Image (cartoon, rainbow, N blue to C red; front, top):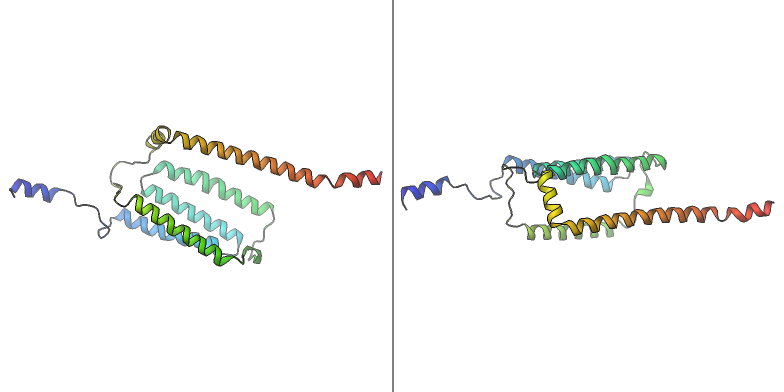
Length: 201
């Protein structure tokens, strides 16, 4: 081997590996553990308000994970939609329905083991699919951001237009169905009151 070739081999960057994690990868692992712990507490606690607050921690941890993966647009969507809208809507629902603040025995289900089995099976299947699909894929965390608004929009509307529009139609159908069901429930609740009024007359 010539000296020039040896210098080129030494200067070449080492291939990524699990035995030499970078600071960003260590931070990703730590945030992932915190997110997992918050998610577990959210589904195991018997206090509904605490479950909602731990859900905020879990969803915020996911947003931090997206930031560490240079997916800035997805991270802010996670914060604005899930943390800023869904969880706030859930808390308002708890307040409007006068849910108990303390421990709620009704929050505990007798199907705990069945739910645990389904959750573990779904988690194993998801991890297996993701690892098998991206086994040799590495994200350059030190390079330019790969998840900016421009890159995400170009990929979404260039390669995923049909699934995006199908999802929009699905959400619209769910919204219309919710409106129809709510109006039907109001009509059924008001129907028994009509004969009583006529009898009183």
